[in-house]
Length: 184
Picture 1 (cartoon, rainbow, N blue to C red):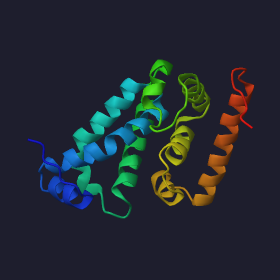
Picture 2: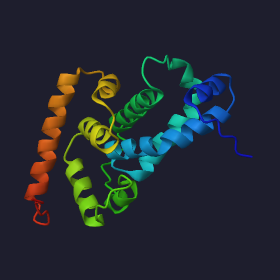
Picture 3: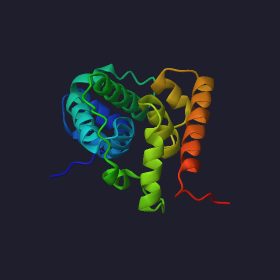
């Protein structure tokens, strides 16, 4: 039987009581977006799935750390971001790029071709993991700058500068690719 809670507050309350019904709603609501974020950092679907799984396995134990100072989504992004960076630092990411799966993680609702999706994934790969994550959360997920400031623990002005430089790097990469055609 599938119990659908329907609200973040109720789900958190149930999870804090040790009832996994709350975990189900949180997973259904946020797992796909967190998977996208992790993939953009790690450049490996397998490792991104591992981090998402680890996050949701740990969530019942760490939910007490969520104080409600930001949205649950912002807090989950921050936790996933840190888990991905820890994985990179531990050397578990052997720079194995999985371009063949990039189209599976492309934002839904966009009519980008597979070639463009692959090219954009390669362009994102020229950025360091933290910058990739920042750019993806802003452009791919539409996370507001205020929430990004909480996730990255940086002032909004600094984030704007980093986003601008990241966009410039991606644009420069795309312009160098012979298969990229400028859209007027």
